[in-house]
Length: 133
Image 1 (cartoon, rainbow, N blue to C red):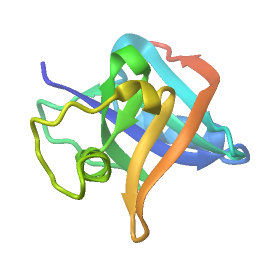
Image 2 (tube, rainbow, N blue to C red):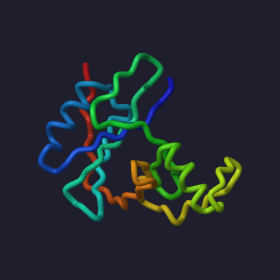
Image 3 (cartoon, helix red, strand yellow):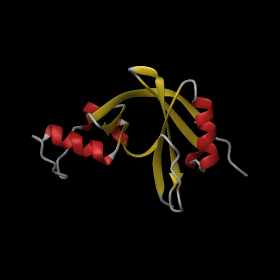
Image 4 (cartoon, rainbow, N blue to C red):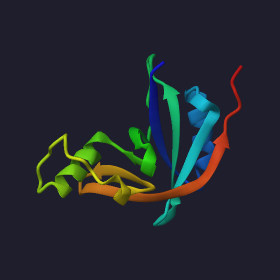
């Protein structure tokens, strides 16, 4: 089995519908979906969950694949990691550079047209998924 961490962006108003769509689209591993809130905009929520990606996976709208640094609970895309490295290494991308993860504790690191975006997060709720029959 090959696991993949996904993150579906939503808001407080659409959370229930988003969770329903995620549960219908995927078999959620470990039967848990973590809902994180943006500490600077508590209406913005991110649903994170693991799936088995060994088969064909259709990615839902507003969903991205992430990686996780367990020790600091940092979620990130590879592009964001590369931007972090460059910002701490005089603009040079060196994949052997050791990033100080503690400075990114409890956050999601993304990139957009403006460059690196950091979202400070906390747990909004943990949703336990009923096993499909």
